[in-house]
Amino acid sequence: MSEQSALHTFACIPNFSEGRNEATVESIVGAISGSGARVMDWSMDADHHRSVVAFFGDASTVCSAVFAAASKAVDLIDLQAHKGEHPRFGAIDVVPVVPLGSSTFEEAIALSAGIGENLGKSLGLPVFLYERSATDERRRDLAEVRRLRNAGTDADLRNALSPDFGPRRFHPTAGAVAVGARDPLIAYNVNLETSDVSAAKDIAASLRKRRDSGLGMAGVKALAIYLESRSVAQVSTNITRPDVCRPREVFDAVRRLSGELGVALRESELIGIVSRDHLSLEDVSHMRFAGLRETQFLEYWGQRYSAECKES
Image: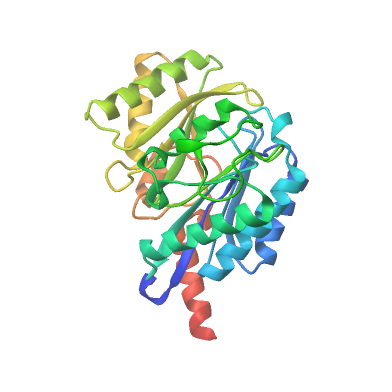
């Protein structure tokens, strides 16, 4: 955000396991807005069967907004009837908290713990603290936490699997939730001009291989997904170290690898929010974005919020 020194806020980007019922997602977004938080962006995807909401506020507001959204998700989403391409284990699947402005990670960690305790006590959700908030190194990585879904929603959670808050049993319809303070993450996807998902699988595997061998793509997590509604294969990535590997580098790598396979690129897309530090205007013009909005940039909200604070 611009003028960060004037701000003491937190960004929160909860992901929900619902991408097909717009009324449900709008109800969740409305609950967040109604709690006083500023919604920066929200989106839903039918193939991923997932929605992502990005908002910000002070610690108290963020805690209230997450609880309001989680309450809606528990009431309206039945994970047992859920089928989608994106990995998940909860109706409100993950609640990342990112410090903005003068806020610190210590404060973000404390906020995430407060959110988790509230969700566990009040909604009966098993809560796992992850990333910087993890109380066990085995739970730091979200993918490792999500592996618990393989146990089934009726499995006991004991010993090393015990949640940080809430019952030791998955909620019958809402599963579990991961909550944690984390560094900025960019959810970035590239759609290929083919319905053959094997090409996307090859590309995703190549990105992971480069990451694991230290040859680039640092912090890039990549999956191949078939988007049935659009009949295209997608390389879906989470860029967890954007200061080291920018989205443009991922785009260029996917373009090169797809070219080697004889597959053209259709478009790329950003899910959620990003900083101009990681995605410049030149990058945007280079990367074939579809539907990118000014409101997806943190700087837009930083400038607007700072101006509002000065006026008040």
